[in-house]
View (cartoon, rainbow, N blue to C red):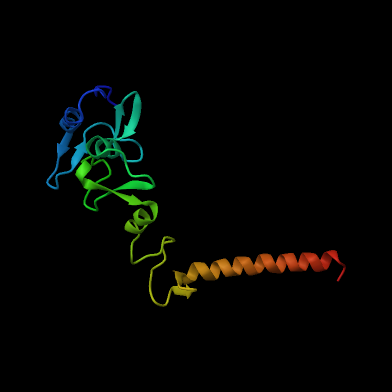
Length: 153
């Protein structure tokens, strides 16, 4: 974390000071040259706090992130890109969908017509649905057996 940025300076001067600490690649990404956080994101010391780099630069350029939104990097950008033009605010649901691979379910099973279970207009992984049903049926059976054992039958 670098403690060189004056948070009281005008925002364009702050953005230029940050950009000077970056290398710019062919996509226009500002790649943070400081040590990244273990998560892979750039962290910048600003106003006596450690801030995530792309969040800080977005807020310096565009103001606060809209309420209920989070920032999403363009698909061509690495995590340590802090160019404020390479992130867009999305709701959590939109952000989750943007990170979803259309060929696989979140569990990792392939998203195919034979492995898709549809119920009440919702789709899910057939393998995981069957495994869940088996666990549920086993729990129901154990509870039923325990009840009948407790009443003496």
